[in-house]
Length: 416
Image (cartoon, rainbow, N blue to C red; front, side, top):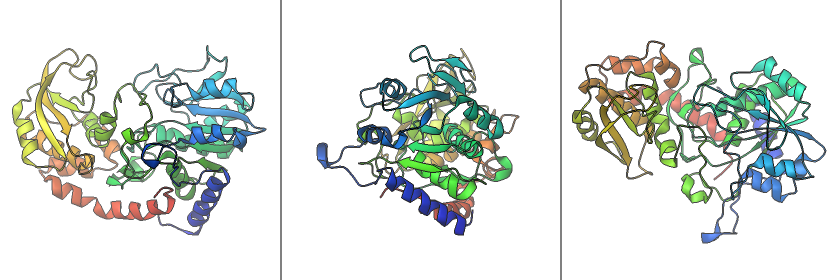
């Protein structure tokens, strides 16, 4: 990921494109406290959809693609004569969000608009380029709410669609939305490319601290063999330190197990438990905040609290998942309670919980498919936990690669 001349040129070109799209990142003085966030879609619409004029448009979106008054942007664009919207492309969970993890909705015509909906889940490269060609679009628009973690698949749908659009000779427009985990910095291990999968295509940090528009610029400048003609419509009124609530936007579940902004805050750490034999809380009303297994008791919360991890407390908890691991069985564990969001480090916290779970539960182990290595991006976390390493030692082991990623990341940031 050395920043080379091609990368710098691509970064500069993307910045120019963003400015051309009317997307300067300065704050807007039009709301309470002198600052009101406006999403990329809001700015596109306020400009009369001029960026899409004369184009046959397809949009990659899901239930999170809504306006401030929760109208879906597909419905809004379809009803607006200034937009020639001809296709919709659905990611994991589907355009209307009816599918669980690892599923999608397939190809169908949307009952509300009559538009053809194409399934992009686990489709990439030339087959996805062929879908874009078949759809007849000139421009592919992307507008999906991210959760801020490398293994949240929508950012790899973004990557795959950019790559496919380049192959198909299509223009690509990204409409930006807030990162709910903030854009303060990047945290956690960086993916090693031999562990690339749909939960991590390229070497970025586990908590990337970027918006989707910034990631699109990073992809174009660092990873795509053939950069796509890219334009980004940025937000106004967003600061890198903002948590989602500061946006004033409604929270729509990006996926079935991301019910609240609290979930998004902890997700980049506790999703690592998907790679273990413990429940990550799927099948409860607090997925990724409730963790546990059969035979775990109060000693885990006690051990976790003894680490004195910043910004978080742990409560002994018992729950019975309605699906997924331990379905219908009451298990013991803990619930994460974040009391200081600014101090909280979700990835360090997740590592601390892995370390202490191994210490207090004799049933601790990893899924046989090595999902933990794909989630964390290498064997580092798994092997160090197995060797009995402490939280600080594990976190220290990825600092060099994280520093290298942060140096590259800085060239693609668009907000102060």
